[in-house]
Amino acid sequence: MATSYTSVSQRERNAQAFFPNSATHADQCRFVCIYPAYINAKKTRAQGRRVGKAKAIDNPTANEIRDILENAGLKVVLEPNRLYSREESREPQQRGRIRVQLKNSDETLIKEQFKTKDDLLFYLVEMIPKLKSRTGNQQQQQQQQNQQGGGKGKKR
Image (cartoon, rainbow, N blue to C red; front, side):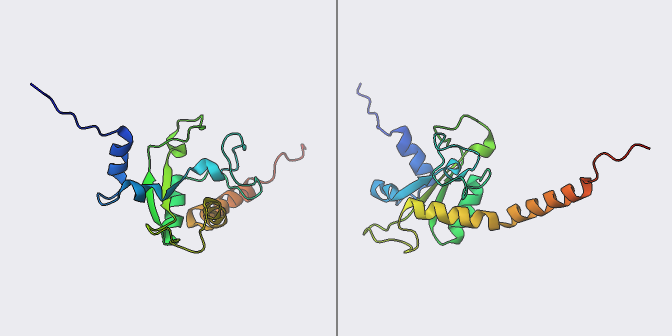
C-alpha cells in the first residue's frame, strides 16, 4: 500500500493563512517585512533599531504601523504572532510583523513615495507620533505631571 504525502512547508502554510489564495510565491516576495523594533527608540542598533535614535519613537506597535501604512494606500499584511529574532521580550506588545507590498508584479512601484524599506521607516517615524492614541496619551501625562507638582513643602 503506497501512501502519498503532500510536501507543504510550514512557511507555505503560514503564507497561505495570511495571503490571498491567488497570491503566488513571486507575489509574496514583493512584500518587505517590518518589525516594530526597527523604529523603537528603546532599542540599540545591535538590538535591531534601523533609524537614528533622535528620529525613533518609544514602543511602536504592529497595529500602529499597520494602520498608518493602510491609510497611506499600501497593501499590508499583519502577522500578529511573529516575533523579531533579536527581541528578548516575549510580551504580546512586542509581537507582530508587518509585510508591505512595495512593487507590482511588473516591478513598478505601487507608490512613488515609497521606493525602499528605509522610505517606509522614515514615513512611519514621522506619522506614528501624530496618531490620536499617541497624542491623547501625551496630553494625559502632561496633565498628571502638572497636578502632582508641589513636592515637599516647608516645615513649620
